[in-house]
Image (cartoon, each protein chain N blue to C red):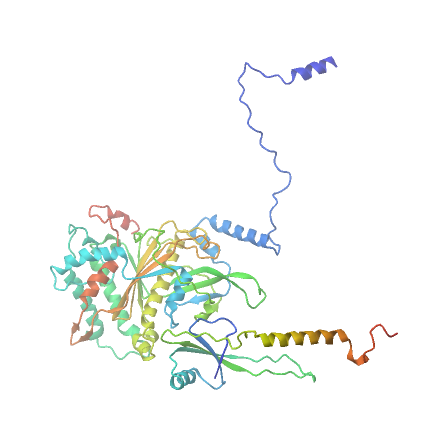
Length: 126
Length: 458
């Protein structure tokens, strides 16, 4: 059971989970109500087919695993919004100066040219 | 040469002595090229606009209402099936947004105004008065300053109790089959009640006398609301209207030849329509493609083309006990409300379509109908006024009108039936709600009026 951020926007009272394929709607309802005391009004599930189109270096098809998605509607008027797990960090003075150093270093590295030529300029050659 | 010069001098002669009508500005000569308009078949926005205008002109110019409805629903595409009796949570809020409806709790104002004199008149003679008929009561005569014949509330009450006892006590019925409780007792009770009360009150109410009672009729309506982008298929990426279809089967229905009078003016604003940003499929609502049907219960040629009252029975999977067991007590009222709003919208909109109105030709007068939603013991009353049919994306932009639905909470009619007696009969429910609910009728009912109009179709 894994709460996930919905790919398409869901109504406020709906939480989206990825659950094990063997879990049923009743199992999900009991799990949430008894273990986490979450009031569940309705549960709807579907099975997402994992794509089988990519091919590896041997031209064999690589299957992405199937998984079950559960949409749980909360009871008693509760709402849920998936939190932002990677908020923007505030920039301190120290980190800003480190970023400047790094960007300057990267510029120098770019100007050097192909490292396999051993410092020989680009215009030298046939 | 001289002749020619003379002729040139003579030509521009103005005849002062004769009053010739000055010729007006000469009409411009007929254009040599055909009119420059957008193509009909090109893959361009101008061509699409021209095709849409052409379709609208075709529907406007249709000779008969049947032809209009045929062209309106000719193109079939996947559409959302809206079920009035649904298990979906908070469905009434979604349905209000689909149909542009404002929900006002309580009885409709006209019914409330008529309830006061009705209650006063009834309370005096009979003990506890009795609610009029669950059917259309002609208690309109009550508010008419007592000049009209007084309605026998006791008689109506005894009729109601008789029907109830007959179905639930006197008749020896076996146990109902699984999930067939609805057809076992409440169904026959409602049919019996409505038919007896309609017959009893038709003497008072000429509209009822000319009405038509349908048993298990079908009501369908198809409409567009909002826009969406097509997701899969060969039409992927195009902007399409969101299509809806209601296919409803009320238990009973009363159709009348004359429209019920309006409750509030056409442009009245009694509240806000909920705006829901999500796709309807999140309700959950599912799509299917089939016939786009618009039907009120009878065909267009039927003289009883206006609706009076519908009676709905709550199905067994949505009954009170099941919802309480699933700890969804707040959804009990939602079930009644969504049923009332969806069914009445479909019925009134189909009635409006039968008169030739559609989303591009909006209604010029409001269409009013009522409904009673019950599960045999608990009754909820609804009154719907259709003010606008313009629900498509472009017609809704500048449309200030909203449809209005008045509705009550579900209240019990009686407590229990035992030993041949109906215990706890809720007279208050009848006086205040059932009476006025069915009471909605012509305000200007007049004894001396010529009622031959109502019988002209017979």
